[in-house]
Amino acid sequence: MTFSPVGRSRKQSGNSHRQDPSDESGSSYEKPPSAFPDGVKVLHDCADAAVDICFVHGLTGDRDSTWTAQGEFWPQTLLPLKLPGARILSYGYDAYIAKATSTASENRLIDHATNLLTDLTNDRALNDAPNRPLIFIAHSLGGLVCKETILMSRNNPEHHLRGIFESLRGIVFMGTPHKGSWVADWAKIPASALGLIKSTNKSLLQILETNNQLLESLQIRFWSMIRELREDGRRLEVTCFFEELPLPVVGKVVSKESATLEGYSAFSIHANHGDMVRFRSVEDNGYKRLLGELVRWKAQLSAPASAAASRAETQANQRFGSSYNHFGSGLQFNAPGGTQNNNTGNGVQFLGSISGPVQFG
Image (tube, rainbow, N blue to C red; front, side):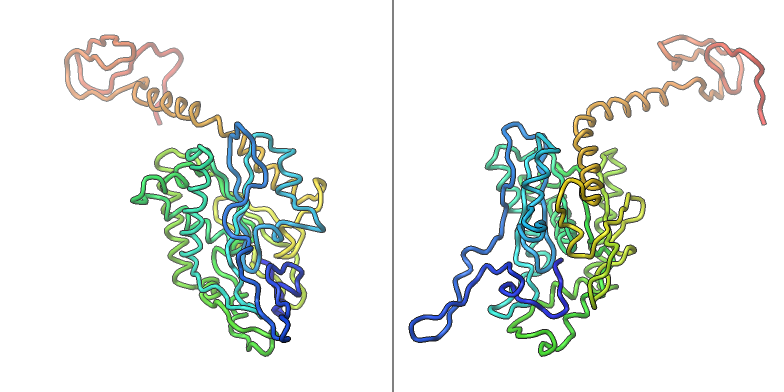
């Protein structure tokens, strides 16, 4: 989320994608939004990629400026050097909640999630990699969009749309308001106090309100998915980052409590909500913390097969333990290696030899 309490327009913030030049009669008109940066943009491609890493911005951001600091578009310029074999993408959607020069998008969270699911699925299919491991890096509202996208992919009636859920290996949440954010109150401020605003999209702000029912439902469904993955023995990496510094006047947009998830790693970044995803160099400590997680996750991508074998071996050892309960007489054939154990009495039978003293209690 790139947030300003005075409601700067795109033109004022230097990130304008529309112009309002004047025609010969002196009247102004608006350039068609054909160049709006939405959809999937490939930042770095490689022939034999082992993983797709997709960046998703938050409120009032876009797929380029959100991740750029002093001209350094770090997902494109810095990350490929440290993550060879990673295909890096950035996803854009119209998340402007207020506009001074045009009508704000009326898309709801679920609409943005639907588009992300469709666009990313199509991009991966066109690149012959529908099942390639996938990692999301999401800022602010983008984390909620990603969560809804993953849940929509899970058990989707369209088989090809289930690929996002089935391929997901990790999510980095950066300043994501899992439990809401007071910034939603911004929608209640009179337009006159924010500048020239023609329209607002309050649906995106309302879901950020603390105790919002839609936000609570999203959180419940997300935790249900996590439990299902754990029961299936599937590992999903999750790391949360939260802002250390407040914005001028506004304060902290998302609290540590809201930005973190119980049971998962959480790290702070010495920046405000907007700057926490803008890294200027490889020496930026926030960048190092994020990179450390990504490098570790990428190294684990080849581990599922060996992990499954380890689980199978553990289960086998549990089935063939060193003792079994028997409550009758007769010949026993369930010893390891097919050994026959002759039993002529009742009680608990111990297989193999026992050396040393045995104590109970």
